[in-house]
Amino acid sequence: MRYLRAFGRFWWDFLVGDRLELFLGPIAVLAVAALLVRWGASGLVAGAVLFGLVIVTGALSLALVVAAGRR
Image (cartoon, rainbow, N blue to C red; front, side):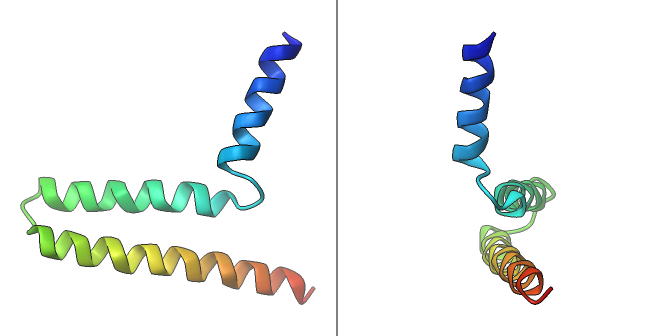
């Protein structure tokens, strides 16, 4: 059981690290882009939305880090 727990901790630290929003954000962004394509949006529109939401996710993460540093 100890090895299984250590294995899970390794993958959590490797994938998530310190910023949970940088792990979950791109997954959510890809889901939104996939839904757009499934609903008939063009690849150009879905790509633009994907790019924009990735930028927003990074900016949000940076804003959270800056806000936490000011406390």
